[in-house]
View (tube, rainbow, N blue to C red):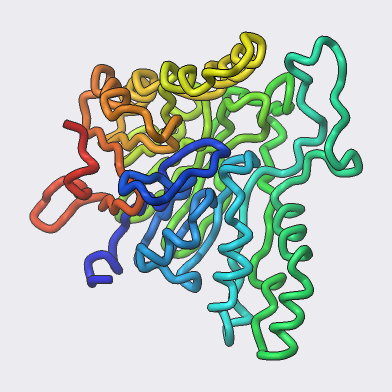
Length: 356
């Protein structure tokens, strides 16, 4: 890492695909599961842990011991599936650093099951009815407990670190005055609130609209070098506009509904409507992402969590119809510099990340 990068702020788009799908990796245009590294003065703040994040971190030259915090936007599996790899495999790099703590912050327990949709008035049996809606602290502990045989073997045989002490799950407490309820008010109008701060960065969060998944958060990272907002999964959200106001870079999810619908050629009309209804209620089109970026007054909009990942590039270009600032559609592994650059140049990204 060069001196400028070590001292400044940048984002690496480790994975840019959305959705709980396994994708073949041979295509050079392959997109891994959603994961974003916000890097401030060499410290890595990881947002979401989609499929392939541990490998993408290694490819980007990001070391596990550079992690200063992990932030989970919500508990859909495409955002959490490789948290396991980051902790259990990456955690071995903390040998000799047992005093280190890497907080894993994210939503707490939902508390109640979401309403049943499309089941003709019947209630499907819950999975693990004794604990059907675990939170982030539960998730972290459960993943590490599942590997206790391995962790104890390595700790006793080769002095591996105690990962249960290094990785600490933290449920984000939503301010009580916000009036949050997972069903009746999962997206109340509210102000951003601080969830994390250290000597390099302050992280604020706000509730966004990803019904029925709740809580669902967007995160903003502010440093002396600049500001970055990560939308998480959300339908168009005024809360998101409030959080992202005036930031240097907004990374926002995007969905191409036509391409999604074409991906269900054998679905029954009922199944198709159930799936498409969710996508329309819980995600954001490129045009709407552009409108949100315009309303927030951001400098640069980068579309990620692309659904479907194989949609034609012109689908994402529609964001330029509603946003006049810099528009990026980064590939996996792209680096985006934040804030002023030497000579006063604007933020930089790899050339092929820019829309044409």
